[in-house]
Structures are given as structure tokens and as C-alpha cells.
Image (cartoon, rainbow, N blue to C red; front, side, top):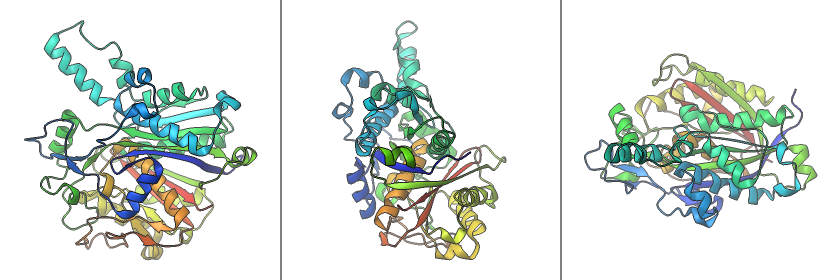
Length: 412
């Protein structure tokens, strides 16, 4: 039974275009790109030599050096963003029952940076020379665990893993925890740090990465006729969710309302979406029904918008299938045009953009949309942000394996 409305009271972000909500949001509205030649390793000879890296990240600004050394990069991102979100929420954890605070933070891949370092060390040095913390630093649930350790929260703690839908699914499960009455507050989101040689090469061999290596800031171009794949990204997005009753009781400022969730699975392929977008459409329809709204109550869709040939067309079909004639009245945009594809963090970061868009009445741009694909014939907000009064908005996340998640947020 649904006990109360769920609201957002805090948000934190680590991204290639800004660390911290204010810098991130200003860059998003401006249409900044985080793309450049990969600096983490020498990408010469790779299919794709570019990525949206976070090059100025200093975990010591928010995390103790002792704790930071015990974390892989993705966990550092998650804890850093979580601390910002809790501060924005004005959440005094010490004054609350920590067992009534949950943590649901996922990652699509976990600590691949540590995994690759450990493997290379093993090959070079042989057994008995490894990092004693390699396994706990690598496994996917460590983002949630390290957030709990650093914040002192003892409620339900786990990670949902669903490829590029991970961020969205973690937010969805966090909402359900509060609705069920199991928690009053949940820290939730996604984190990813997989700009590593093995991962970049693997995606390159799949043929899904952009090879526009000489023009990195123009490489991610969702819905554009000349798109040739996505650009790898990294980062984290964290939200503080609360029941309305709990947030009101403690006098918290409410940033947005979390009204609905829709989930489905194509059940067709491990990598290729249903070409007609039927189950992706069903996820959007279910999110609207879950919120008790009508399809024409939706004004904006933050698209999955990967910049791949197949996904952008399929998502366009899914939106038209879900919304019918109302699709032509929707504003649509892709955050990935600026951040690249942050994989397991994408759904959470893009949900944050959606809430901020509702708050400020601004649809962020799809940059590099210079030659619209005729098969992507929605209003995809090319190149410049657009002021628009927004009531409700959907954020889409679709992952390998046909995993679809649509989240519906409302303006306060």
C-alpha cells in the first residue's frame, strides 16, 4: 500500500561538465561538452580515443584520505555526491534513526579500474603480490556500502544492476522502500568509472562508440543524422528521497516530487532493443499510470538518447507509440550529448537534470544536433536550452538485455 507521496530533498552530482549541483546545472543549461581525448591512459590505436572524463576530481575535499584509499573511483564519486546531497537536504543523520535510512546506489560495472590494475599486477608479479582490498573495492555494491559507512546509516543497503538502466532502477527501488513503510529516507542513485583500456576497447569492438576522434566535443550527437556512436562518460548522481510526511515534519525544502515508475523488459536480445520500441513505450505508459496522470499531463522527456544509430530511432518510435499525437507537443532532450554515456550513473544524473528542469522551467539542449535524422522527428531541443513551463516530466533509461525504466517527476 502506498503510504505517502515521495519527494526529493537533496541532490549531488559528479560529472565531466561540473562537480556539484550548481556548476553542473549551469553547464547543462549552457550546453557544455565534457568530451576530450582520453587522459587516463594512452588511447592510441583504439577505435575510440575520446571520452567525457572527470579530470579535476579531488575526493579529499569531502572524504577522508583513509576512506578514499579504500574505494575504487566509482565509489569515491558516489560518496562525494551523496555527501553533497545530504548537505543540500539539511539531513541531520545523527538526530534520526539510522535504521530508518536506506541506501540504494548501483553501478553498471563496479571497480573496473581496480580490476584491471590487479590483473596487470598479477601477470607482472605473480601470486601473493596483490592488493588485499581489490575484491571489496571492485564489487558493484560497494558504492552503496561506502556511502553508508561514511554517512553512518544502517537501514537497508543494496545495489541494483541493470546495465544502462541501473541509475533509474536504483531510484525506483528506493521509492518503493519508502512507499512500503520500510524506510523514511533513502539515499539513492548511480555511479560509474569505466574509462579504462579493457572497457573502452570492448565497447569499441562492439561498434557502439563514436570514432570522431578529431572532434571530441562534436562526437556525441543524439538524434542527428551523422551520429556514429556514443562517447564514454563517468560520474555519479545521488538523490535524497523522503516521504512527504517525513520531509514536512523536519521542515525540509522540497525540490521535486517523484510521482511514478514504469519498468519492463524487451526479453529479446542481450544488446539490441526491440526495433519497434513496444516495451520501452510500455515503461513510459506505466510510469504515467503509476502517477495517476494522463499522457497529455507530460511536458518533457529526458531521453535515453545515446547517439547510436539504432537506439535513437527506437526511442523515437517508443515515445510516439506511448504518447500518440501528444508526442508532437513534448519537449525532448538528451543529456548524453554533453556528458557522454555514464552507463550505470546515467539514469540518476539524468533524473537530476529532469528535476532541475522542472524547478527552473528550462529544457536543456541536445547539443550537436545539426542535421536531424528524419526518423527522429520529435522536438529534440537542438543546441540551445529552451524556456518552458513544465508540469511533469519523464526520464528514460534503457539497458542491455532490454531493461527499460521510466521515472516520472513533478514540479513542486
